[in-house]
Image (cartoon, rainbow, N blue to C red; front, side, top):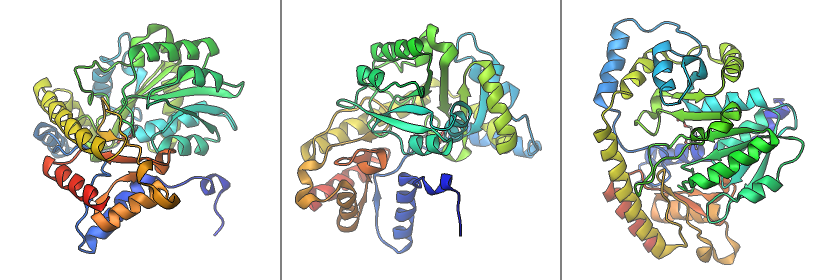
Length: 376
Ligand SMILES: Cc1ncc(COP(=O)(O)O)c(C=O)c1O
């Protein structure tokens, strides 16, 4: 069967592949501790489920506006000073937001600068838009702003920033965000800010957003999501906040790609915005204590930075890679011998590392680390 060159050049999502493998192993009756998981362990809030059920019962089951429910867009716009509903588009998770955004900004061979390691879908989505991902290594998981500046060429269209970061959990300090905004402004480049893990920041850090920097707003595209922050990964509700002209371009694309996002799921999302802060604070506190525990365990076994956000550790495992084995083989052996799933660094463009998710119960986390220790 002849497939397009475009589709032949991309790799399927490494994390999704792992999830499927784990499901397959469980189907065969094998016991797997899943530390590869990319979603929080909390149930979707009752109030959200009830609002969704009410929307279904009330017949909110038909097409709705392509860019999203006006009331949901207005509520989301309140997070962005000076923005209104016309600055927001709702999509099927921030994954679709990002995909659509690259389609809108990239001409063939345009370059998008992506700090490495990176979330699995960024480079493939850039390629699917005809663009070229250009990777710039981070330094101890933090941005190297000057290296990013040096990577700019006449073909560069955008710089992509993801903080809190998947896979490292790094949260970039406000001064680095200011520097990156200056660089983007000087060169008239789009700045993309993926804030999918926005509410998961620890150590009393404020979740700084590039949107806080006023001068860059005309070039800034922010993506956020209900998935991780409200325990709603299956609802598939994400959104972009950007200048209105950009939203209009995205709306044209979305009108041909999906039309509206599931109507009743959007009513459920509206309710999530009413969740009281204590409930979210409890989640964050619980995740922070898991981060502390996981970090202590991982630091005894690997070279590990302490992350301040998201729910991942990204330790350097090279001291365990004897006889030239790769981190992918290392992760494969952990799965086979210890029954513990982690994601190899290769999926995120950086071998010699593994991603360990601590978004599981404390018991699972403890037993996962016991098994890894034993296997090592
Ligand atoms: C950095 C990052 N951005 C975006 C997404 C997409 O999330 P969703 O489509 O569920 O909003 C993910 C999911 O894992 C992610 O890790």
